[in-house]
Image (tube, rainbow, N blue to C red; front, side, top):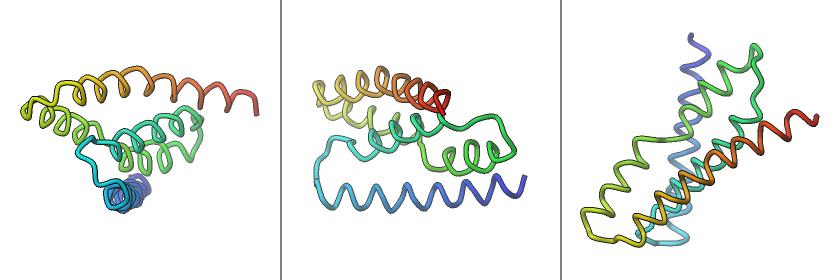
Length: 112
């Protein structure tokens, strides 16, 4: 259990710093940082196999790295601000490309 918590702390720190970096570089009100983080996290989760490291990497690091709650808050903020095209884009991109990224990770891991 402790290893999962350590992994989650690592993932959260990576997410925080990557979000700050992306927002600093792009300065957009579209939640691109969350989209990038969740898509890369889905891809990497697809790669993680059911091993002893799954708790550390999958549940821990990638669980702390990805963020469904931030995605929902940012989506609701776009809706509240009546940024309809951005909200729809965010919803569709996450909903379609998240499972695609996870499948690609799973598929590529099976090739190795």
